Image: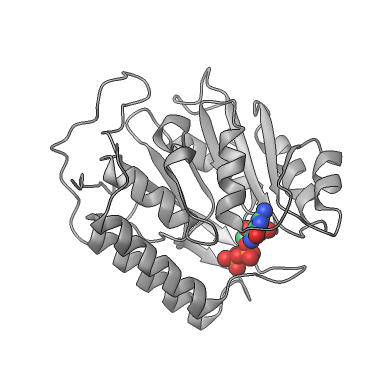
Length: 274
Ligand SMILES: Nc1nc2c(ncn2[C@@H]2O[C@H](COP(=O)(O)OP(=O)(O)O)[C@@H](O)[C@H]2O)c(=O)[nH]1
Ligand SMILES: [Mg+2]
């Protein structure tokens, strides 16, 4: 069973997928078709393309996606924000367009998005990096950035940089986001954490890139992400109100304590940061 018929939180809720894609014509169609196949109730797959020159938008539309097109290339963060603004569902699933994330695992993320949870991250560190999926440098860099996020924001997660994730639309307001490139995951994480939201993780697999090249520039983007997390911790955006539980519409418990450092798995809890 692929889980698509389960998921208490999902029952009666509309799921929208958002896929940032820049020059991913070789893989984006397969990702879009995979999402429709594994999430039969999904109401839309939105592909956010900002200036691809290889037919990405056409490939995505051909597979049934709604395509949001930006006039010129800005970065993953700018594309994700545009995609989030177009969302019509109650629940958002983010996934990469390059085939490194497996749409067959999407139901697992959605099933973990229960009413008391604000965001589910697909953790590659709890799951598996397949052959060629990550370099030593990026593995270490991801660990470091996750450590920095946990310490700065009082969390205990294993994979802060994972792009494969699901959240309630109301938990992440794109108008409060200001990431442009690969700081987008940190942007989302910090918004949820600053509002006292609960983040849990499920294991996922990460495949190698089979076409094209990653645009991630190790030191440039790694440093940007770190600086960005520090800046937001020091100067949070105005109005990071406590997240309201999506089902009860009551603010989440402000007194929630974090789990022990390094605690792993779906019960990993979070601490509100004020
Ligand atoms: N629209 C858009 N998507 C982007 C951009 N940069 C990266 N992406 C997408 O974000 C996802 C991850 O990018 P990638 O370069 O593979 O990063 P990595 O997986 O961290 O190495 C892929 O789906 C990319 O197509 C961008 O400038 N614009
Ligand atoms: Mg990639």
